[in-house]
Amino acid sequence: MANTFVNASAVSKEFLRVLRSHLPFTNSIDRYYDNNTKIGSVKHGGTIAIRKPTEFNIRTGSVANVQNATATSDNLTTATQFGVDCAITSQQAELNLDSLSKEVIAPAAARMAAYLESQAMASMYKDVYNTVGTVGTSPASSLVWLQAGAKLDENLAPYENRCAVINPTAQASTVAALTSLFNPTQKIAKQYESAMMGNALGMDFKLGQLAPTHTTGTRTNTTPLVDGASQVGDSLLFKGTGNAVTYVAGDVFTIAGVYSVNQDKQSTGNLKQFVVKALATSAAGGGLTVTISPSIVTSGATQTVTASPADGAAVVNIGATASGVQPQSLVFQKDAFTLATVDLPMPKGLDFASREVLDGISMRVLGDYDIINDQTIYRFDILTGWLAQRPELACRVVA
Image (tube, rainbow, N blue to C red; front, top):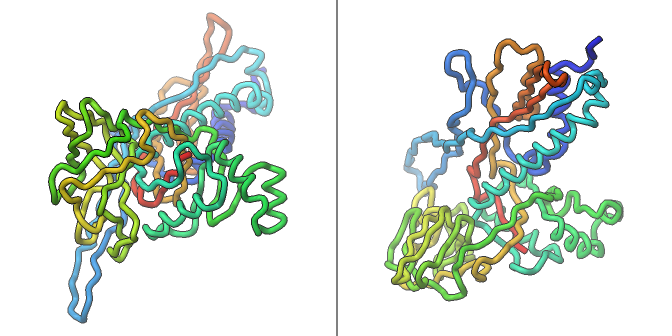
């Protein structure tokens, strides 16, 4: 007799339970579940408009300066479908749910969680321009994490739901460095026993075995210069880079004389950091056009810098070594990143089919019997996408 305890709904719920337990990064960011993208009765992926907060100018004096609260949004594309497919024997199909989970469901869910975490972080860290730390030096004090928190403070990131996803080497050196600080005795004991940071320094530390590593472009220690004064927007011209020098998505640099501003649009005293959005290769004369984030905006509600760069202003690369490898940890407030999933269609004619949603993650399981080989084929699927909608609320910690 078939195992009545192992139906499609039970398998999909167990799969999501295990999946969720393996998502330190995804569990700490905003999640968006869309069950309204339909054509007829078939749900599908596509583009989702994620709303963002309105930015306003300050009025001084008694005369009102009315501004429209115009809703703006960014497009998040859900085009990444991935999954695990497996065949189970007739004997395994008779297992109870706990046994089936140990043999099949949990390993599949853990593998899918690893893929989801690595792909999301590998994609979104490249949109983060705030950067602290020293390339080649693993954090060995609280300072670098406090500096990352200060970057979030400058951008008015809420204090709640702050998280640090920290790579294993950085965690080891940080835990060792902080054991002697004036922390509560119980917290120090917990860090010592678990070798993990836990909640400290205003953020929730989570081990990220899949935290990304960034490899810079072939840009060298030679300092390129800004080519032309008064440049604004999301592209910037360089000169003096040398021939066939590359900047890759995720490279970070500063520009002499261009400072960041706080929410009151006053200088923070720190040079603004910019991240390269797409591969750029210099021409024979050393000229280069790079697409950058944030855009250079010198006034108004969306102002990002104190002034546009001067002609000939020096461009200083963060981690100047050509093709350098930089392990990354991420400090962020929840609203910096969004992960969305949408419902996959449910085919007709299958007895074993279920789609479940847990904490904003939609997952589908389908099963069918292979009469030739006397086995059941399971497939587990997720359709997802991600967006660094508010990268100013995040900071990279390089090592």
